[in-house]
Image 1 (cartoon, rainbow, N blue to C red):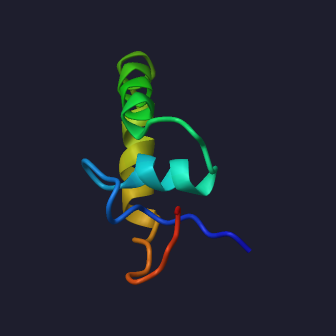
Image 2 (image 1 turned 135 degrees about the horizontal axis):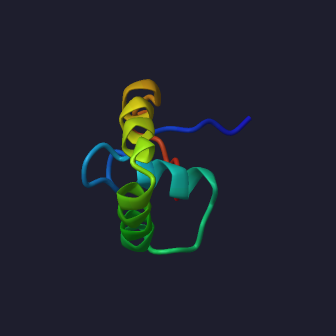
Length: 69
């Protein structure tokens, strides 16, 4: 079973977006996803709260693994 983790390497703030990109196996630049998320946060302000909650709840990916690669 595939698990969702925050990325250790593909992160700017908490690695949430990088983790979602790896979990969903998206072939999209992570910076583009960050820009989309930031834009949506300006319109849908509760998204910022959801990001913070995800940052707290989602564990960091295990070290030494090849998660997301």
